[in-house]
View 1 (cartoon, rainbow, N blue to C red):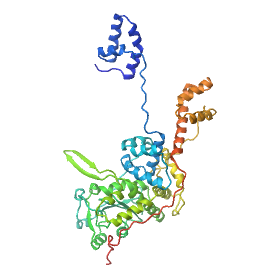
View 2: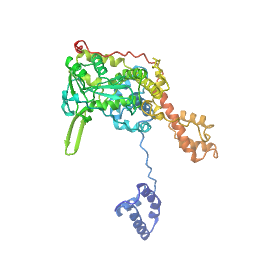
View 3: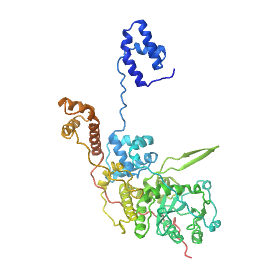
View 4: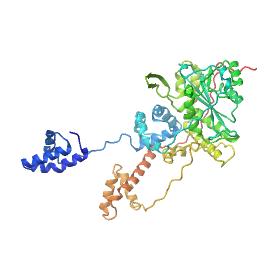
Length: 519
């Protein structure tokens, strides 16, 4: 028979009638049993066993499972999530083994052995579950931008998504992202994005205007700073790429030049993904124009270049199979672009050693602080509140580190991403009923930290029966939760300083980067 009531209701019914059933006569027992079976849906024999059980009259208390990940783990995870620029759990999971030692090496973080073990042992699903609250404060979706198609594209061969196979490092997809704020009128800044197919290494260059000569100049400069030689580029059909200047440059430098099919963005899936996860995530959709904005955007990309390529794991498609209309995709484990380059045989040992040397000197927190500072400056330039170029500053990384655990409560922290949130109300509508008794409660908690708020309220009521009501339990629970969160933060954060960042500029050896030939 189908169950008609919930399990908790059935348990209450058993506790209510078990004693009466045990002391009833046979005829009355049959009547009680018939009614009990009709209500609960139990089999008759099972119902008799339950009502005759010696534990039937006892309350069946459902004890909550002791949480494995306490407040200290959650606070530390939120801090690391903010320090990774809010990546998803599947990307944060492999990053923890790199990010935690990096922050500890630079004196930003000090974790207890138990907290460290739980953090590194948490699965990606557990990480996402623990971060569900902070993530809920930043809703929103992204937009997409289309390009143009000039007639000169016919002189450039077409390369589709399925033609890449497994190329060595140096074959890049390139695209231009406009920062016009939803309109193409007037002049505004653009971003040239380049993504390596093999490793996911991403470079971003701020262009003051949309000009083919600037694209060629940017490519010439990047060829000397990327950790691999430039072997090929694949662009869309925009006139800033499909032009005689870029075609001639590729022929002179022996760089293979291909293009995607018109209106087929999936042919450039790698760079299109980076346009969203890197450029739009960092810069947003506001209008950016002028020399000061271009300079701030260049400083932003100088910091994000190291942060993204050394501390941002990404997925890479392993294979894709189609059965009818169903497409199944399998991905490699998330890795940073630097980690992928270190595993490739095509990268020289000298460059691998240079990558390792640069990785040791990088401070992810200092890079993220520089990114946030430039985002604030870009947002002010876009709003017109300032018009000058950002000046170098001395970052207070200790204060920045401590803010990472609670900054998620403010919602979106990237000022370039969305509008500033309204200030939260910071005053109480009613007086705090536990203000006078709070010193005593703190003393009790310090002596017995495992005491629950309900036990503390019962103790207060015993000392003063008329001072506190049962309905004030929720208020006390909030105060106790805040006290435990503060205690957890004291265990997580360190007070040591951080050394200055040595930002080495990556550049391949003279044999790797071929210089452009003079015309």
